[in-house]
Image (cartoon, helix red, strand yellow):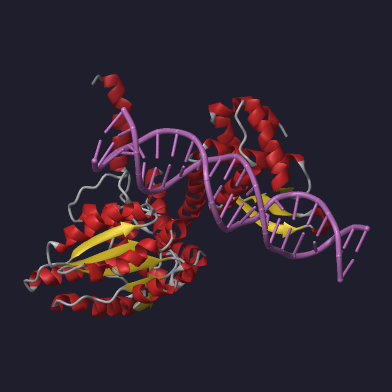
Length: 409
DNA sequence: AATCCACAGGAAGCCCGGGAAC
DNA sequence: GTTCCCGGGCTTCCTGTGGATT
């Protein structure tokens, strides 16, 4: 490397090293980190531990269901208890249970869940192609060759049920009767309290032999969590008074989400570090809040498929053109115009209706069904993000050059 | 009270790409 | 190669509906 190109970089690195230290350990500030101590979850930990303890005496623990909103510590608690269960088994000379953790938000079809289970016991299965019950039978057979206990954690199980129904849960809850030697316990984790209504009553009674509720954290509890993490992850004097309180307060407003609280603290710390400040201040937290919100939206919109983007831009244009509330029909009319301009075959209105609902679920727009009496029933659609942001994203996308003239409002 | 708008949203089924098994 | 399966995106066809207007 020659000097010319190395120098500016060198300067950056030097500056970074010379700037006051703020972050001691970035990893402990990430939401995925499972700390050694989980404040305000003693009750849940105890309960789960008591149930899983059956494994230590060769029993099959009851299936359990963990409920609570995002960032209430469900996943962390489950992982924490399982880790200790494993340790204890090894200590007492027992065969530790097999543990398979599946995030159903990502692995969200029956087939893929089974494939993942197979993989976790070392059976390779193609990710498509086989009949689902074949994959199930392979799993049962492979599992039954040993007499171990397997604990299956189904995180975000409500997503799986919503997308693929409860047939796999039905199979899994009855799997013990197909097994001669091995045994299975299931831990379901759900954000959605209503998801029980979608379940077959037989599945429900089997899956929720034990139920444990995780209430949202209060602002004070979030404060304790943040304080503990800050001790591990941030240098002692690098945090101004009030910063932790502010993070906790913001997150408490969002249904007591500890994940959000940690994100705020971490991003605030990063901002402070980047600008070479000696301390994280409340201003950094406020900026972090804005940045997190904008980042989430920007990334979601950028990642949208073409048709969804078109729908979003159609909604944007509808708002620019009309003074009254924007309805599905207006959006569809403009959408077809855009398609014509871009020489794209338009989709049907039925499909667009679904795409609008998807945008609503992503939080990019608000769509509510309203009735205008004689003038029909339709969705009233509002943008939930700033117009400027959408406009910038549109202008960045080369595919939409041709329709940018529609935006000159 | 009856009508009727402008859609909502369920059901079924098509088509496609990816992949396995025969 | 052929034949099967799966999931996702999509269309077609359909029945349902809240409330202003008649």
